[in-house]
Image (tube, rainbow, N blue to C red; front, side, top):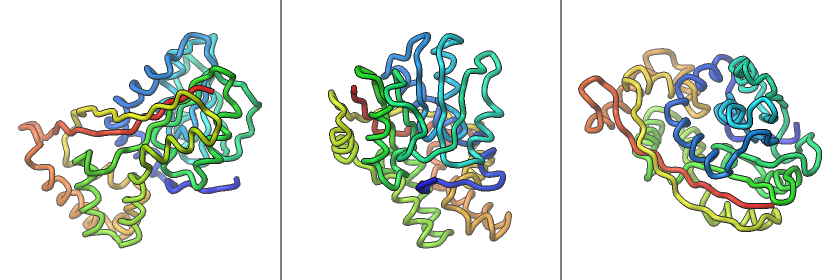
Length: 270
């Protein structure tokens, strides 16, 4: 492995990520797949696949005549992704590799998708050149990154809680997760030789599970809350309550909340 991303989960955190990140990932998975017009029989690459949200959805669209390769550098995330792979479409191939050095043949894919991973690549330019290399001529690529955290009230409140209850290093790392701009994405796409580049905002309102348990679970599944989890359950509970308090005006009587989330969606053609 030639690099490490800024999103590394250890131990049981990948299982918690699969459970607690799902509500806020699902709407954007569908948006990115719609953008690339994934068709039955297509060859698709899910880059920085995490626990497989996109890979599973893509497998359902390409069907048994298609093929999905899911790549991630994190062994724990791949383990969860493989365990969750739908058995009706067994043709999902899981590969442990960094985004900037893919052990994949040139021009082998109709579509490359990277959902919420590009902002963590140490070398975005090289990663996108690799993505372009494995795309067939005329193939499509779509990349999402979170928009500035101020556009997503949950992330903005989460950042303030990490600032208060975590370490300065954790807060700084969390802030960097929202620092990949539209201009940065467009520049990197162009440098990779991709054409017809577009970048736009995608906003979705998400109905969360009841906040008390969901917020606590989600905090425990992030790489920026290590000091809280190491400090014990009481510390994590205090931080979770503080985050719920910041979202109190958005809660419904049953404890759920409707929260807007905003991503950047960048697309291009090889």
